[in-house]
Length: 239
Length: 156
Ligand code: FES
Ligand code: FES
Figure 1 (spheres, each protein chain N blue to C red):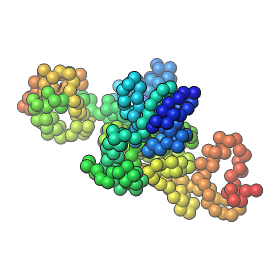
Figure 2 (cartoon, each protein chain N blue to C red):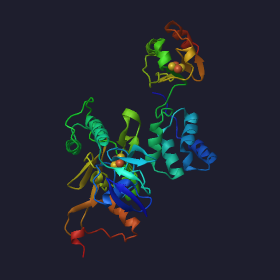
Figure 3 (tube, helix red, strand yellow):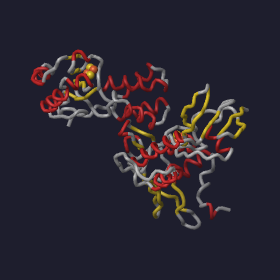
């Protein structure tokens, strides 16, 4: 265990944890967009920045990546932090001016408008979906491709992915709702910012409802070593 | 249309073998594949992913990240026009324009006969010789727009 101070408050923390994790454990709010406790931190959005003092010098660090240490002093709010966060928020807002989640967060951080040239994206490239798809689902159907101003979220070659199972975890986890899916009749549609895919849904043997993508069920069935008929019925019709 | 290069898989296999199928050598492997085919054909990326047992997303991300990699067939000769600061102030833009006009392609494009691909770079560290045009690995310094035509004609 290490002892550190966050906003003047002394807290105990397990070694190896990050400042953001420890702050959350102690109900101290730090804004974030790309952090999720289930996956490896990535440091993409930079909103979680805080000020740390070590060796008498104050520096800005990204709290979702910075590990706690004994005697560390952390500030989660200061003029400098606020100014930097606002600048980051302005940049995000310029990239995604029509995204509601980003507009909302900007307002919370006191940013009404951006002085940068407006683009029109929904995705802010935090790669949370990429990490969840790979680390939680275990599939890796999408990733960030190209670089610089052309950086984008896409499947390889912008073509329908062979490995995607249509589970929709990417849409579920997206912090700014840039990915959507919908089930219409016997088909699921997944819409990523740059391409889309269709999946056949499985029909329940008993009630006849379409309830989940066949590929997803097949994937789960194999992973869990279940018998071939394990998903013949939807959860409602299963005993 | 040019004839599409066939998925001559044994070549990729040999390259992968020379790295003992080590996934951490991905960039070097792709460099060798590109040296073999002069670009990265789609099937080779799929094969690299399968044989190294890494997701295709990762191979594709790396292949699209580095400017040195191309997913489209490229010309027999690669022209690089330096647009770095020193070359720029000495008129590199006019050189580029002249090459564009001469070949009727823009940077990043390849001529229809697959003879030339035009690229730009930002400083190659030979500023004193600027403006510089590099074709394949040959440097031509102190370029002038009216020398472009002769230079290009010396390639076949
Ligand atoms: S939450 Fe730390 S950089 Fe996004
Ligand atoms: S600017 Fe062209 S070589 Fe440096």
